[in-house]
Image (tube, rainbow, N blue to C red; front, side, top):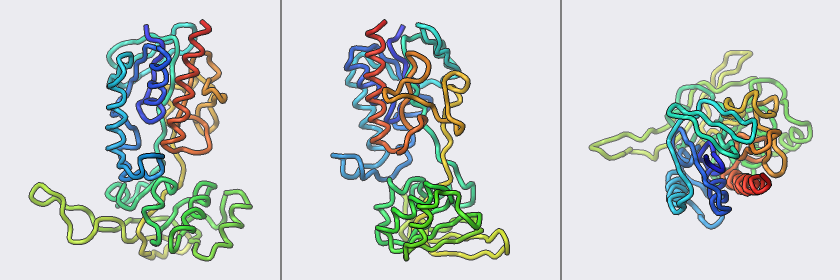
Length: 317
């Protein structure tokens, strides 16, 4: 019997484990892939205080090293198949066995919705980004593009317009679904060009090529252009850019929680300020939870609250 089982070892899950262990809880982390979550695919993290600039793989390794310092934290690489959150004893079933705990912390995260066009996967982390707040500073003074028509896309275009020489905003319709005030602000910014009724077709650039066991290229690797198709005229044009920011939504990884805890229509887990779901002893933190900012630092903060809340809950049993 564990005091808490944490599902997911991204920033939220790792921080929750650290706070739970410091509160004296016997803790199990179940992660189906690797410590760090989405961070592992991020080339440079510049907005985590004290670390200045660090790659996703490097900070993920630091997270794993930090976990290894605690004797009451077990980390197992297992895929969770089902949770049984009701009652005083919670059950978590993986492909290998069923575990029991007094509390569960859901830190399963989310993944960005993809364009699914040629060049997207090839240039991920080299000019294809899913977070302007995370990666925008790396393209200061450059020409970039945002794809999307909702609040997030417009907010990212406005943010990028302050640091980039020009921002192209691509939307597949002729009007935005974002709130009116945001749209009005967007349209008043001179270095933003809007491409209505358009969809991306292919992303181009210079790939890293492997030669004699080492990566080498004649030109700096990364995105240099993208082709857009007008959905009304079928006209295709190519625009020179240095980065494509995809802002068409995220997909929360919350299938385990469906029908078990309260969720939004978009599939995010609902909690109170203590990260408590509607089920006593079940908490959620990170990108899979309904929140306003999905960043490493906010996920870690929510994980800290969830870990501490789990300890307080156990003290009342």
